[in-house]
Length: 374
Image (cartoon, rainbow, N blue to C red; front, side, top):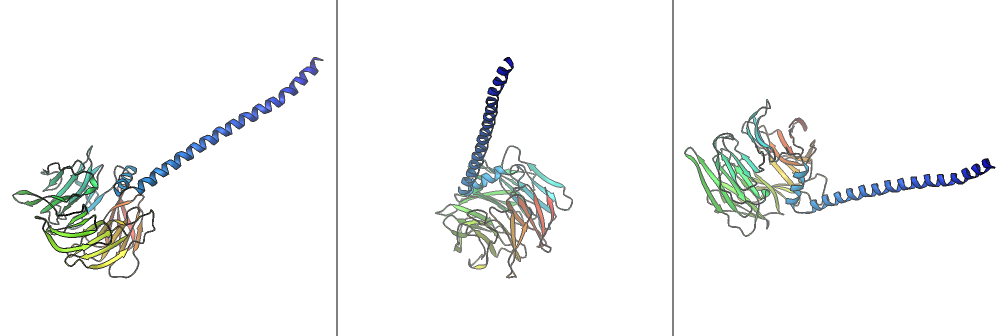
């Protein structure tokens, strides 16, 4: 009788155990589903924030890209006259002059806790100009490491609203604020003579660049107009044009006869520095990555034959041969967005600097990457 009772009791317990096991499995599955949902929501939220950052102003976009990159990201590259030296500016890390052949650092400085806004160097290597986010600038008439001349704090505001430039011979150095204030130095054997003035403008400046001789200043405004001014006085010259769209970047040709301008409609144009007429024009062909695309980094070879341009959101840049009607060559290899382009003295070499922290050297003859400098 006792055995029968025990067997009946066991039979009664078996369904209950199975039910409990099934319930336990069900709870585990539910918990896993909740975790997956939370992860998905977090991921979608991050993507939404990234999208919102892209949809914001150019200033917000650059800040986002800078935060996402290495502290060693490259913002500007400059070569010297004979191509033996390479200036590399990493705003969050350092600015150094590199011996291109051996790779040794000739001179430079660490930014430490300060942050660079812009850096410019003369082709002859005599003068360097550093502009800091805090609104101060440092002029080095004998190169970094030598004597320094500081400007007063001008409360420049956001760092991306500043343009810094130095003439080819190092005799003129200046930086320009968005509001039209120009502050600079005329460098002579007796010392550095300061000058400053405000450009007559009814619209904030978006870009400015100094001609190689250090006598003319090209400026582009938010209203789409552009002009050329005397460097020392700010007096306007006859050159006055209305650009296709808002100016994204601008550089002078090596001979000072033309100005290469990129606008936010994706076009790159070469303008005559006297008449303002368009001498050459092309549109970026890099596949659209975002809602907008323009050449944020441009460069022109010293002989005027080649033009290079990198899209504002791209890891690829394009090179056109101005003597040919063929499509541009696309050069890819960077793992981050390109922030700077510079041609070598031989007109057959291009340097590119990126948010991935590297500088890459390219051969135009073979359309290949020669080496990586990090």
